[in-house]
Image 1: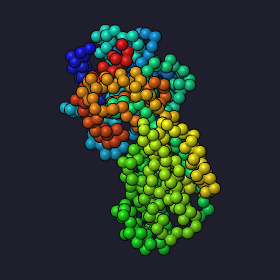
Image 2 (image 1 turned 90 degrees about the vertical axis):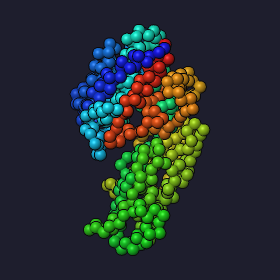
Image 3 (image 1 turned 60 degrees about the vertical axis):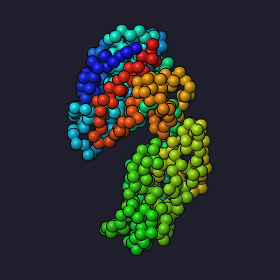
Image 4 (image 1 turned 30 degrees about the horizontal axis):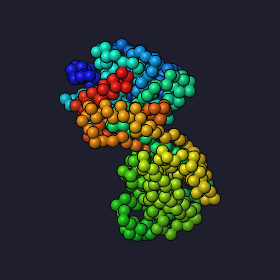
Length: 456
């Protein structure tokens, strides 16, 4: 069908609705009655549900954890999984991150890409189909989560407490175009050893981030050895040394990145341990440094841990040490692996446990996410690819795999699809997050064609 005129007529209200939703600060906050993730998240969920109700859709709020916005009739259901929570604004903004600023050519604000803009775009696509009385054989339901950016308790509540009807097929517009048909398995774990000597090493912020900085406090007697090691290092610009009251402070500066794309970064912990290995260390600090370089080193793909593996769909396993710290007489490494879909989380876990057995380190699982795999030749993937290609004219791009994790993993026959275009700058989670209005128009056209093809 030709939706061109309806798309043109919808653009102004679409821009305004996205901006309005982005003006609500929906970073997860303190739990309150009926607001499991804080007032801002609850307010945004209600605003999105009201938006759907004003469009004439059926809506429902499940105790502040999840919301539904549904249209149409039919026994089968098409699901669209998104979320209303956002990451903190952070520093470096040129405008108010909660301003929902509209300029001549873009919308600026936290959440315009991740994930408020895509959600509202899907709602407007549904409204066009409704207003044009386009005959559909399947219902369409937007499912709104509320803490996707942290630990998915919203989705756990939805699946285990609400126990909703499952869609026949679904997609999550919380990634990139075209289709992500495979998402790698996730295994996060800690390796912990007892320490009796004073060791000061601290750096990184999370399992799933490549650490951009780390510091160690050493004995001042090592100053000349440290300076010599830095001078001889191929990464000499990555290190800073200063003498402080507590000792010789050595910092390693890396390049931050998401653990799903750790090859885009440079691990500061690995840089530090590489430098420390060149020093005349003794005692438990030497044991820690030796352990790290023997089991991790500068490797990205788990070679030294003995877990390196690869498959045709996803490529190689990745292994990131995202954080190191000491606490209550223990030293702790926080590790994150993305596992190709052909391999099980359990098999990798067993190899790690076997590798560290007898080293004095204790393995403890922190988190897992099952992999996602929907065959490339499935009806869902083919339909989404056809809709994307028809609108964009891009017949070269192919279905892709990812180390990231989206709500797609929560349901069967669900994949990530959009909304970031192949030529669109990815500023999700960054300062000055923005959405170009000409790109938004393409989003709307793709989502309109997609929902129509899936539901007809």
